Amino acid sequence: MTAPQWQTASELALEIEHRRVSPVQLVEAALGRITQWDQKVHAFVTCDQDGAHTAARHAEEEIASGRYRGPLHGIPIGIKDVIDVQGLPTTCCSRIRLEHRAQTDAAVVAALRQAGAIILGKLTTHEFALGGPSFDLPFPPARNPWNFDHHPGGSSSGCGAALAAGLLPLAVGTDTAGSIRNPASACGVVGLKPTYGAVSRNRVFPLAATLDHVGPMARCVDDVALLFEGMIGPTQWERHDKAQSARPPSSHREVPDLRGLRIGYVRSFHEQDMPADPEVAMALDTVATALAEAGATVTTVPLPDLKSFSAVSRIILQAEGWATHSDWLRAHPDLYGQSTRVRLLPGAFLTADDYIRSQRIRRVLLAAVQAVLHEVDVLLCASAMDPACRLDDPAEIARTYPRQARTPFNVTGHPALAMMAGLSRTGLPLSVQFAGRYFEEATVLRVARTWERMGGWQDRHPPELDGVADSGAGQKLGAAAVTGP
Amino acid sequence: MPQVSFEPLEEKVIEARARALGLGRAWSQHREEVLAAARDAARLGSVLPVLDPTAEPWPPMCVPGSEAAGTPEACPPEHDE
Image (cartoon, rainbow over all chains, first blue to last red; front, top):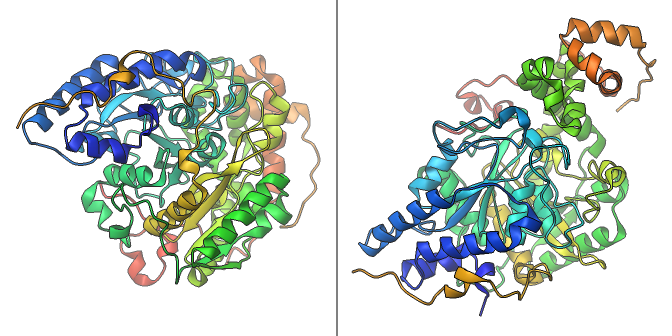
């Protein structure tokens, strides 16, 4: 039987629906686990114990009286600390925002509350979703549960770390240059950057408006699909192609059949543009072979050089980031962490010509990706070129941070998902990325689900945290049922 | 894309530019970072190719309904609030 901390949201939803577990029990179990582990993981900036208890009791009363809202009802969830949750600070992990209190919920948080989710708290981010990992901020950086000395990826670092540590089953992150998929890759969980604009960014602190995305993270593909559906709401979900196949019943464990699906393998990213660590390259080949065995037609496809995407992405990000931060940077440069400041300052010196040319070249790159996605249904490519490096090695962080293939899909806005592709010899997650056509998240999820079930990666957890008996409330899970009609 | 060489910007030029941009305080407190930022920006801009100003592609301009005109890539889909 799956240990409580590793149960998926989809499994927990069934337990709640059939009243074998109550939302209050779930929240108490999560809080017990956070108390036990977060001093090492540093995933939480704010843990809203009172708010979570109140919401859980309310959910329990609703379910007991027969008003079950759906599969997110009573499920604890964490929110990256750049997204407003009413009554809580949105610090962006910055000194500049320590006094902030959100007056209302972000639209995505409101949608999740409406679906019955329980907001457990705010999760660590690199400062303003950009700098980091940093040791000169008011909050310590999150750590990788697979090895606490290593980087969990970022900027949605708390989301990845909390999921991998089993502190909660679902988290909402943001992704401007890979910030959902980087921690998903480093922490061995699943992160989806949806189609640009698919999830509302209302009351989400911006980094670069034309590159910013909000998206779901979880420990398995089905949970990512579940959370994505809750984030966009049922009306929006209907706009998404093949919606019906996106979220099969959680008991459906067999490997999906990919016959008829065409997958384009972008080898050039990790073989030519940015040669990957050999273990990463081998893992990607293994994924391609497995998907072919599942029935897909896998062919090698060309895309523009990663350096082109990277140059365009950096200029747009830094120009738009400067537009957001210019007043604060002029008045209080010392309040920023060094890592954030050095990433934002170049934006001041970029010219209008740089920005306009980048936006024009962006359209050339977008057209190239669109052309390939006319020929294939899904792209398979690298996410990170290396396993996570040590957190205390700034030179290695600087070397490995740009070694990734995630920014192309921020530049183009196509949906892209990163997940585990294997484990390195040193026991750190290796990753793979799947990207698809606009609004065809369901097809991307279908491929990801196939690989997950073939690889069995959803059942692998950080050794130091696996098999460790929970203290306190976690042991009570499943011991009692919600009473009522 | 073509690589274009550039001359490292003179410190005095960068200081004047930084002050004109309102970054006097940053210059005083984090001079090396401002110097590096200005040089980084010059390097970034220099790697972009020159495009014909009279021809497509132009920067995206989002017009509701532009999908119907056959240019959906010009208008990334936005969430309906």
